[in-house]
Image 1 (cartoon, rainbow, N blue to C red):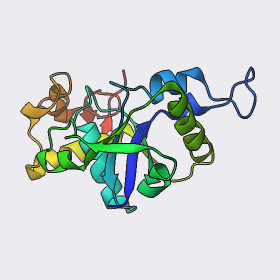
Image 2: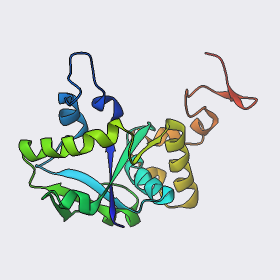
Image 3: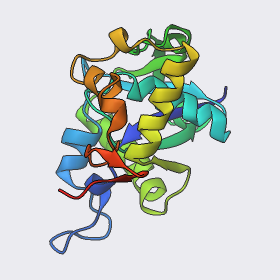
Length: 187
């Protein structure tokens, strides 16, 4: 697994009228590249659709509710060649077998975080190695993990659990309205 995946928010990387083309929104740093103890979270993966879905599953299993998700992948060596260092840290996911895929980019300062943001910027804006998962895809991923026994409903965030109880399974995963004849009912 010589790639690393990170969740990001596409809207934080858009260019607005008040910005120059080279600018990065402050929200990209404050929200999308939010650090914790001067670290950024990454997940090991291969550059395959199935393996990237495994990272998406690890992340989604820790969400508070089913939501869309964007991932970007990088070659591990592309990041370390720029002087960045990593430490292996168990990932925050209820799926035990995926926890050891996690690592943190460490020893971050504002300066080298800005360098990383400039490294990431063209990849996001040109959609290079970016993968998107709709809310329905995330819901399906989690449902399949629960059905296969990889994930227990009890291990989900307390706000996520109701989406997977028996009564709510009869609701449309997108709008949460009752389903009749295979379609959500009108509000």
